[in-house]
Length: 236
Image (cartoon, rainbow, N blue to C red; front, side, top):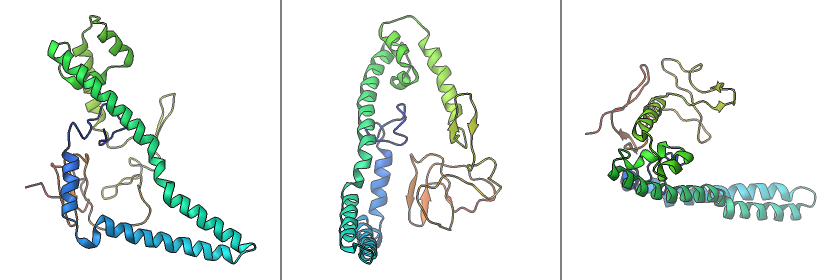
C-alpha cells in the first residue's frame, strides 16, 4: 500500500507499479560491503552509544549526578527503542488509504467496462458526493468532468515549486524556496537532513523510474537548468 507521494490518494501504490521497489533492490545489489545497510547501522549505533556515554558522564559531574546519570541513560534507552513508533500513525493512515484505493479501483474497473468512465483510476478525480451520485447512476457527463480535472492536474504537475503555505484568502507564500532565491546556477529548496555536501548535482523531477547508485545515475530524460554542473546521461 506504500508508494511515491503516498499521502496523495490518487497516486499509484507499489503493488500497482513495483518499478521503484525493483530499482531500490537493484541499487542494494550494487552497494559495496563498506556501505551496506547493516554496516552503516552498526556504525550509527556505536555513534549513538558514544553520545549517550558523553551525556551520562556530563550528568554525573553535576549535583545529584548519579540520579541524573540514570535519568539520562533511561531516557536515551527509551528514545532508541521507541523513536520508530513515530512512523506508526502515518503507516496506518497510508494502509487505510491503500485499502480504500484498492476498492475504488475495483469499482472503477466496473464503471470503465460499462463505458461510464475511461479508466479505473478516473474515480480518484471525483469528490465524495460525486462518487455517491455516480453509484446511484445519476446521469452526468462524467467523462468530460474527469478530463477537465485531469488537465488541471497535469498542469499542476508542471510546477517547479510548491507553495510552503496556502492561506484561506488565496495567497501563497514561497519564502526561502525557489523563485526569489534561484539564479542561473543556484537552486534552493527544503533540506531533508542536516549537514553540508558538495559535489556533482543530479536533477530528477520524478523519483519513479530513476535509479541512483554511487558514481552514476540513470533515468528518463530530465531537464537540467543552464549553468548547473551535472553528469547526467540518458539511460542506455
